Length: 165
Image (cartoon, rainbow, N blue to C red; front, side):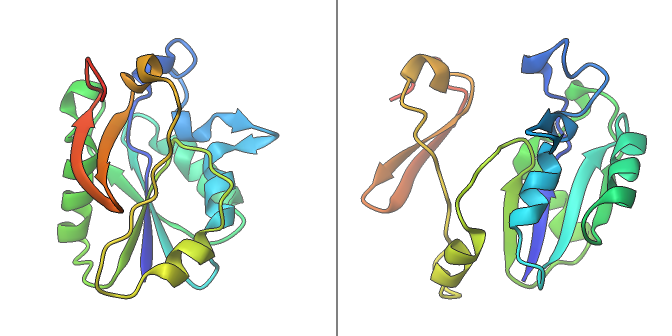
């Protein structure tokens, strides 16, 4: 298994805070958000981090001080308009890096405290697992991706819907 942390976005919703700094590198509780995420990935899993060209130098500095070795993947984009989106980025890296083994994908701009090892151990090699979080406020949900569940299955995904269900 490999882990791909997607951190290529520009964090435009957080401007002006993220004009000169990637959202994944903003400090939370004394260290970059990305460091918190990396600390939750089991040590035996090779980890890749995608970033954009605009913030490449910042990510390289972070990489040098990271608690463990990570491979930095740089998308050749300088602006939000050039982005392929999270799914496009995922597809690009899986194809270009020829990733054929199981892949743990993590959004690099989300803080979480649950144990990834528990999620990974629940994976049986057949059915895909997705962790989602209910923010509990439909007006705030307009700013995020929203899933509709049928039992334990995702029936629908909407990116930043005007009227979340």
